[in-house]
Length: 252
Image (tube, rainbow, N blue to C red; front, side):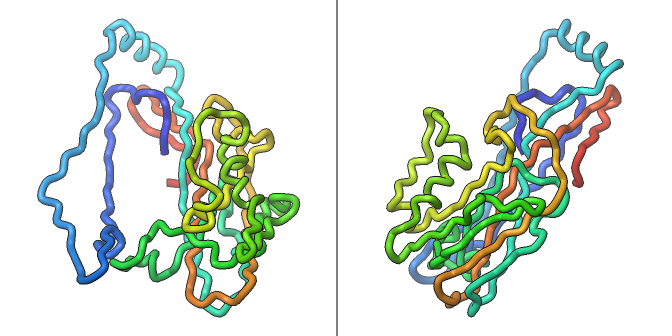
């Protein structure tokens, strides 16, 4: 979750941190290791507001709630069993439809933690068919059909641009070359907004509800279990009233 506005004063904030397994966090060729946290510090930036501004905020809160547009993030995991050559993940998202989806695949062994394996090694696993069905509508209209054995995967690589708005003239870049893409950076990005505005924080899209299905095929049966990781972004709003009660328009 991220937003550009400061929180009004007097709002209680709680943060929860969850550690990953040591085998996930550490890469080592031999042996097993542990991470010991001897001391931890959380640094938070606070700002001092002019008293006149605080008074104006207080008066406005008597009439209106403070509204904070946010980009909410959810991650969905689906395990694909070894020995399969096709897989359909029905209703991996059911409810609010995200504005952007990014999909990647990692070894199940890597996902669960292994000192000798990189958990962020997103492999292609000889995928040769990928598409989404967003409330019954196929995205993209022609499925992605790469042939990684013959280095034919430009359409897949280009989703890193079209699905992240880099393709449309922004000056930033993800610095992933086409050669890198095949060797551990194989991600598939889809902007699901009607006007390709998922990266525009100043633009608000109508909230849609429905389901998202992911349809996959592989050129050969999977030799091991694979985890599909689906990262989804949603437009939502947090409201804070004069009594500092917090209301959200999504399920907690």
